[in-house]
Amino acid sequence: MTSISDIGGAAVTAAPSYAGTEAGNSISFEAVTVAYRGTVVLDSFSLEVEPGEIVALIGPSGSGKTTALRAVAGFVRPTAGRVMISGEDVTDLPPYERGLGMVVQNYALFPHMRVDENVAFGLRAQGAARDLIAGRVTECLQIVGMSQYTRRYPRELSGGQQQRVAIARALAIRPRVLLLDEPLSALDAQIRRNMVDEIARLHRDLPTLTILYVTHDQSEALTLADRIAIMRGGKLAAFGPSRQLYQRPPNRFAAEFLGRANLLPVTLRAVNASSGLADVRFGGMPLSARQGVGISVGDECLLCVRPHDLAQADADVPNVLKGTVTSILWQGDSYSITMEAEGTQMRLSSAPSGEPPEVGAELHVRFSPEQAVLVAQSADA
Image 1: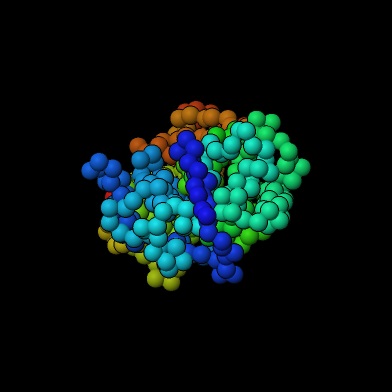
Image 2 (image 1 turned 45 degrees about the vertical axis):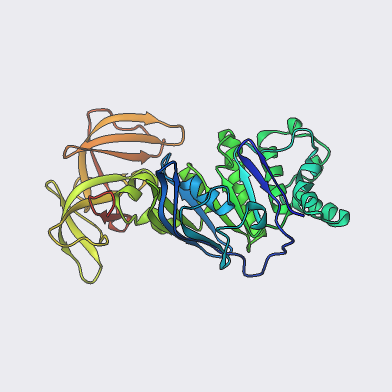
């Protein structure tokens, strides 16, 4: 027998007996559309999650990322398209037949059950043997580092500890894939950083476990995900390996949303055939950057350079920008300096050692051409 408990919008999914495979399990969205009362919230969404990888879904509120996760879980029914797990069409299957583990931001632990009882819940719902339950509970609590808390109730645990128990409960049923819906958003900053490390360690220990991770925290996505999907208006705006998507965003929206970016309006003057670097002009300043996709000589485009890739420099070095300091913000481990250059506001990060420049001072900063890339001006290019 299998069952599902839905508590305050969160779910603990009990899977059919499933031991997983060495290759892991894939997730596929095939032109999935979801509409609520005639309003489309997921629009012909297609995405492939490879076996054993972590894919993060990020995007602004209302972009459809949680709806996509719920479509995999079976909590929403697509109006069009198919959802596949390991090549099996699960679009019409109820949640309890999909073999999924899910962890949400409010933990959804049973307050009247001890830690070991919470972790055992899905297995008991499956009708698993008592010996199997005991062994699996012990194993999963060891994985998340909660073995010494088996007899405690949720109210006796910190937020981070409760989240670990929720992850252990999801793992106990040996899910085909693990769905994480903003699981750390309710935690304070320090515990959240620790939990990011724990999830990374968990995936190292369970390398065949496929994880689909919804988060609004870009640093979590960059730290954990093998690949990141950026969503906008129910559609996929960009998708690729985390480092590549950060360093070479394919469009303006991706550049602006994933990490801070300075976007300078430039004109592409020429491309060096041997190096592949583009020569551009920002106002009266000649600069070099990596060539962008779909941008031709003569096009007006944007030069994307991250604040931490800018460094104070002398006026006569290559790839230098000149501007005026407009604000300085001390952030403990760095200064965030804003400057205006050719009518464009730019930010750079500076180490806290030494005195920062004064507001109103002229400032020269440079960047390596390999640390900047051209993107099209259109947000959807």
